[in-house]
Amino acid sequence: MIEIYFVRHGQASFGQPAYDRLSAVGERQAELLGRHFYKNGTRFDAVYSGALRRHVQTATIAMNQMNGNGSRNLIIDADFNEFDSSDQMMNRLFTVIQEDPALSDQMKQIQTDHGAIGRIFDIAEKTDMMPVDDAARNRLAQQFRERIAGAIDNLVRKEGDSRKVAVFTSGGPTAVALRQTLETTREQTIRLGWELRNTSITVLRYDRERLWLVLFNCVAHLESQNDPNLITYI
Image (cartoon, rainbow, N blue to C red):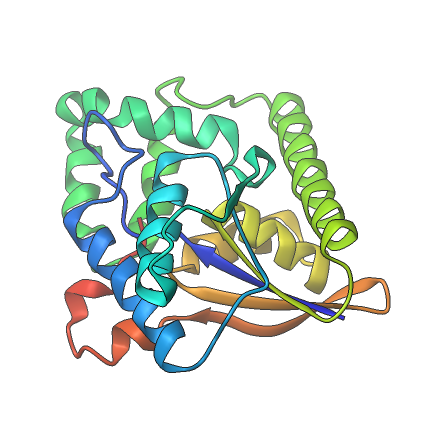
């Protein structure tokens, strides 16, 4: 049996020229996460991270709070990166938002209404920022699912039994892992991904050759601060 803690990255710089870096809020979220693990006595036998900057930053800050080692023992695995076209879209949004009033209106709501993320994606599809051809979209989605499934399989084989492992990643890979666990539809998987909050903890247990859900989208480390501004979705 192995427990895998999927941790979504802290708030990134959404709508800015460089999306793939933590905001000041994201850094604070990661710090609180690490303190939460330390105070609760949570220790990991191994810590993995996607290769994106926001993944590594979140992992490094959290680990510094836990053991002061930062990224020293961090295992970087690009297979835990977000869906490729999703990141490309995020990086291009800064320019498009300036030109599209509809996107600007949604941006004003994004901190308090996580449904705004879905509406931004819908609008972005109409601006040729994402592939709209169903066949192309399905092919990319299948490749993404296979990549995440392979990354999980490789982790399980490498780590073996009776291990507790953290994976710092994004909402997409976590949602895909949940799809493998819960056998959700594509639409349900997308909605689960939009529900995932920054630095949320989702725990899956690999036992008897399958994944089981133990904990979903937990942000107790943020809720304990009584500051609603810390609960974010981007």
